[in-house]
Image 1: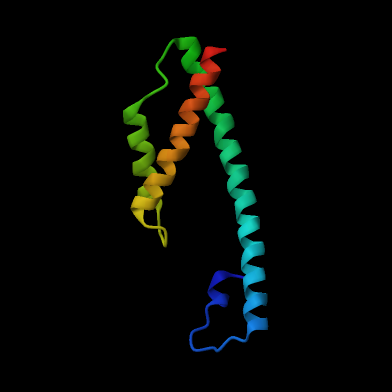
Image 2: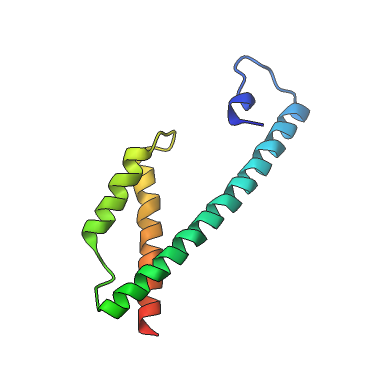
Length: 108
């Protein structure tokens, strides 16, 4: 079921119908969360390759210009409903975790 189908304005919901809709939404969220996790792990594998290249070439982990490019890319492609400032905060966290991973890998 698509999210557009869930929000029918003007429709009174009984508790049973509401519980059914909530259960459907929660199943969808669980599925989306698994896909997000899969994509984060795919991104992590790419970051691990980047870290190996940087280590071999003795390049720094932190590249502020590249991080700015990532933010610009995701913000330009954001079509909502997630606001831009939320998208940036989420990607700041993702990038921070990826940088930490690269640093850990470079120490070994």
